Image (cartoon, rainbow, N blue to C red; front, side, top):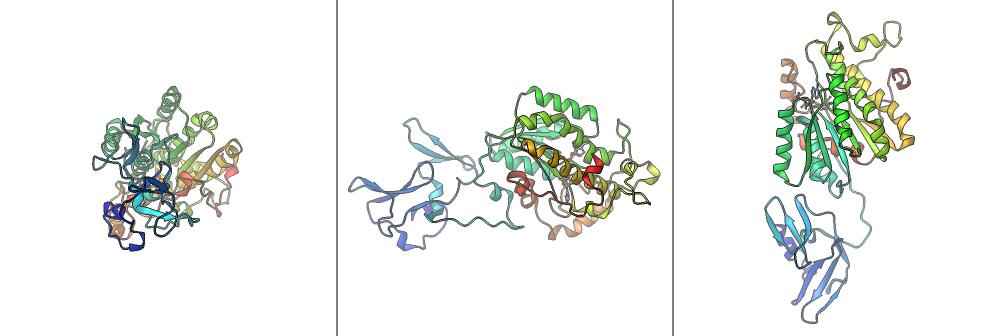
Amino acid sequence: MAALKYAGMDDTDSEDELPPGWEERSTKDGWIYYANHDEMKTQWEHPKTGKKRRCAGDLPYGWEQEIDEKGQIIYVDHINKRTTYFDPRQAFTVEDVTVKPKRYDGNTTALEILQGHNLSDKVIIVTGANAGIGFETARSFALHGAHVILASRNLSRVSKAVSLIQQEWHKARVEAMVCDLASLRSVREFAESFKAKKLPLHILVCNAAVCTIPWCLTEDSLESTFQICHLGHFLLVQCLEDVLRRSAPSRVVVVSSESHRFTDLLDLYGKVDLALLSPPKREYWSMLAYNRAKLCNILFSNELHRRLSPYGVTSNAVHPGNMMYTSIHRNWWLMSFLFMLVRPFTKSMELKILSQHPACICGGINSRSDARLGSDQIH
Ligand SMILES: NC(=O)c1ccc[n+]([C@@H]2O[C@H](COP(=O)([O-])OP(=O)(O)OC[C@H]3O[C@@H](n4cnc5c(N)ncnc54)[C@H](OP(=O)(O)O)[C@@H]3O)[C@@H](O)[C@H]2O)c1
């Protein structure tokens, strides 16, 4: 079959081979029909098998359907820079029977998960989007048509990230904006600048984080890990809450970590101690500060969901995976060493980006069944 040859696959199913004079075509919405050039007629059923077929999914990654000047449908492969009248989806047709829902596992890539999702009417903000999981998340959303704002503390780094995505797909709608989560002033300025664009906001991914950094105070006199990982995002959501509500259905996705399980926010007497969140230098242990901030992420997400879901704004906390080789480990040699050791056994960024997580596209988890601090106690 021509379609299979085009896709680089051998034609093994001779039953599907068309008799001479017949041609397989597809409609704009993916239904297959058969044209008989001798008799000048078309039909939905395969002339040999009598089966009706349709394309199994969306156009492959990088392809777009367009109309040429004669009004005919053409298919543009932006990656290999070629144009064809042949619908590449015809290589993957299925019979017209109920299709079982796809099953995903740890080896499924984000682009596979997003396959079939048209995000062209979505506006998405990703914090910490110049690197790591944030970058891959922003990239996947953008390659599926979303208008993505890449928020970062560093304009030159994030501008490079934007160019990388645009090099991959020149039509990607990506913008760089500065948002330093270590500064409450910067977070407010970012929110104001975003609002000035008069855009809706459908997904806010609170992704940025630091881990195992030495103790230091922010310009707001708070411990940095706590402010960057949690408080900055908390303020960002408050500042953008009205836009999220107006854009409903919309969602907040808070990137937490499994490591939240190794801590609590309780003092020696079992009472909540908020002073633990921004400790003085003598009481600071960087890993513990990270774990506590990640616990706050989950408590915040749960409470946000409780308060805003009646207005169509959902919130989900996600754990992206364990010890994935990004730059999160860069601040402490021991962490870098451990990350290096486990690198062959952990998944690649393409496998773990957040847009692969159901929470980002179609629902999600509100985890933390064993939280030792009830979410209603913190906010
Ligand atoms: N990697 C893992 O194994 C793992 C496991 C569990 C959870 N997570 C979570 O996944 C998320 C992404 O982490 P990652 O692994 O992709 O780490 P990463 O590669 O270090 O990326 C972190 C991002 O956050 C940004 N950031 C740091 N401080 C900031 C600030 N003050 N203001 C704004 N942005 C700031 C960084 O920007 P700069 O480049 O300017 O520093 C970077 O873009 C984090 O929430 C992390 O806790 C990761």
